[in-house]
Amino acid sequence: MMIKLLTVIGARPQIIKAAALSRAIRNSFTDRLQEIILHTGQHYDRNMSQVFFDELEIPHPDFNLNVGSGAHGQQTALMIKGIEEHICKVKPQFIILYGDTNSTLAGAVAASKAGVDVVHIEAGLRSFNKRMPEEVNRIVCDHVSTLLFTPTIAGYQNLLREGFSDNNSQPFNIDNPGLFHCGDIMYDNSLYFTTLAEKKSDILKKHNLQPQEFVLVTIHRDLNTDNPIRLTAIFETLNKLAYSYKIDFILPLHPRTAKMINELLAKELIAQITKNRYIKIIQPVSFLEMIMLEKAARMIITDSGGVQKEAYFFKKPSIILRPETEWIEIVENKVGILANADPEKIENAFLNFMKSGNLDFPPLFGDGKAAEFICNLLIETYQFKIKSNS
Ligand code: UD1
Ligand code: UDP
Image 1 (cartoon, protein in one colour):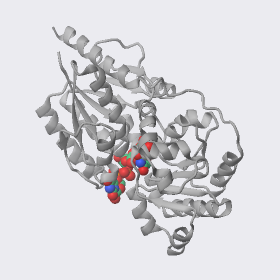
Image 2 (cartoon, protein in one colour):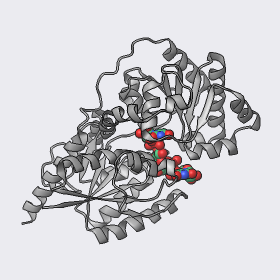
Image 3 (cartoon, helix red, strand yellow):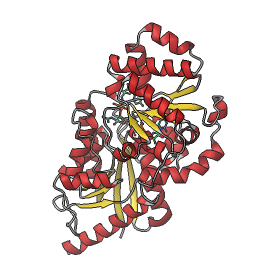
Image 4 (cartoon, rainbow, N blue to C red):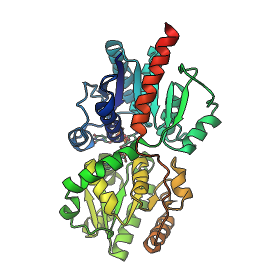
């Protein structure tokens, strides 16, 4: 019995997440699980996509829709059309979707209409802010899924509050979905790739960074990049902190942010940032390089979901440039501070973390074996399905 999985990826964090499941399949399940990878082409620059396939042992995608960038509706529509065509060709038993991007939404719509069971990895997360595009994507995906794998207990509880039942039993289907709290697949990856990163990456040397003596910053959410007031407040604050405290700030910038800096920031501010020798703006880095930066940073300032968590995995405090977060445990443990785009809050959080000594990072994200757990559940679910149809 071979079970066909159609994995849909498109954006950088999904490619990284897919590495964990692909690895588990390759290591232990090749006799039962066959993975076919479809890349929507949502991210396409080499350092936003191909670099991860080269570095993280992910099989080359079987299909690429090459949809590229565009307005949400147009981009998602092209993806739905392409995914539907490939579902008809491949006839998978499950479609595997990660997170909350437009690629996730497109996969959820195409598969549920085609009657293919949706498996949502990173289910249940909520910001309770529906103006955030990702919130709508993740709610839709959860509500058409057959198997929902939550990375945190908070995620599991969110699903229960939305009416999902934890009493459902096999055979699972779209109307009788199975919920599982299995830990975070990104944690699997962080554990697995850290040793490799230490061997392979020389990023600290390349940028002349000393461990514990720099701050890592990532910014890419539309909330920040597309709003001139927020973007200006963030960059003015980073510029001020770097000058005042004479500590390096390294920013591997998402292409969206790089573009919007030029469009939205005042020329004088851009000139000040460019002159500031403590601010190092670089291209997006590979995952192994990112791990090295996260491990060595003094603290991390970010609006990324993945980077907030990796900060926690590597026991680094984080300043979150958002009004809310899906990863509430990080804030509850006082190692992450929600600073929005408020200069005073960012500076206070920065000072707080510069001073604070031993912070506590109790384990929250599982045992690093989420991918194996998911593979076993896929096999079990399929076996029940066959039995119930025979
Ligand atoms: C997307 C996801 C977001 C996720 C992020 C991860 C949605 C709605 N958003 O946001 O949830 O956190 O990916 O990084 O799906 N661009 C390039 N080269 C690329 C890709 C993008 O230049 O390879 C630029 C284009 O100008 C594009 C812009 O970035 O218009 C935004 O890209 P898009 O994929 O629409 O959204 P992200 O901001 O990357
Ligand atoms: N990442 C990376 N290089 C970078 C920035 C981020 O490899 O230059 C990785 C990061 O380590 C994490 C993932 O990309 O695993 C997070 O993706 P992103 O911040 O783009 O999206 P989000 O997690 O917010 O959806």
